[in-house]
Length: 313
Image 1 (cartoon, rainbow, N blue to C red):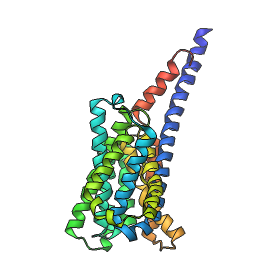
Image 2: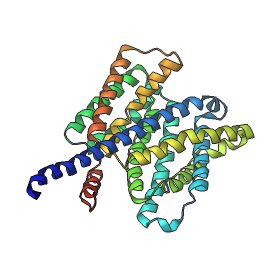
Image 3: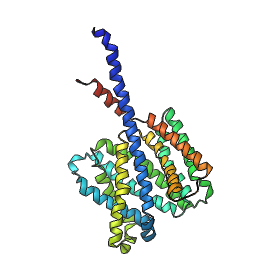
Image 4: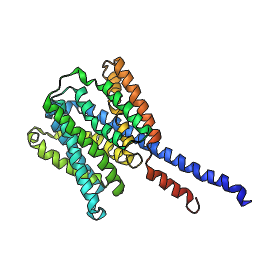
């Protein structure tokens, strides 16, 4: 009788593994999309503050408050970090500040579409380098979609602005890789409680001195609220997402962000939605769906397989 049941039991063991892998990738994709929504809402809510203390000042205030909040909430202990993990957290903080400040500097000199297209070379580069097989198709679709959405040919290119945008792209690529490393090496969100204070310190050195004289109690309170929406919530979600997704899939999913920005602009701000933007939205959505379906990390599959073969499973 035992031989009769061997095949069905094997099938039963295989199915939960595949289901767990797909569910993990789906959860990670949901976290990434939610993160992007928070980013867009945070940027929209920051408009009034940008008018008062500037783009770089707003970025500094958000990063500084985020660092304070995570230190107070998580209260990290250095004993829980290995030397490698601590260095990765510090590096993550530096590139987090870099991508934020450099992009703000870029949009002061370039049209938003041009700056965004150049910045997205970061996640697209990660997706292209880390993708295999069908993953490369999704990253190519996403790249075409981003170009159609941002339409960089519609504006002039200031050389310094281009340099800032490319610097932001490099920092964003490093952010994706380092976030996954920190998420793997440090439990919970303790890694962010180191990286975000570092980001706040770097931003203070770069942009803080020119903003301090403009601060009021009202601005400080507003900055605290904005810091929760951006970057605390989205960066936490991205850390958790990268524990479930490959960096290639995550980089492709990030290309949904300009599509969300265009859709929010159309629905909320009554901005015009052209035919090219509609096609671009369709391409990045298709790429995002493909990335989600094929983006589960290999270690997630291995963990699910171990769970399914463990005693009592």
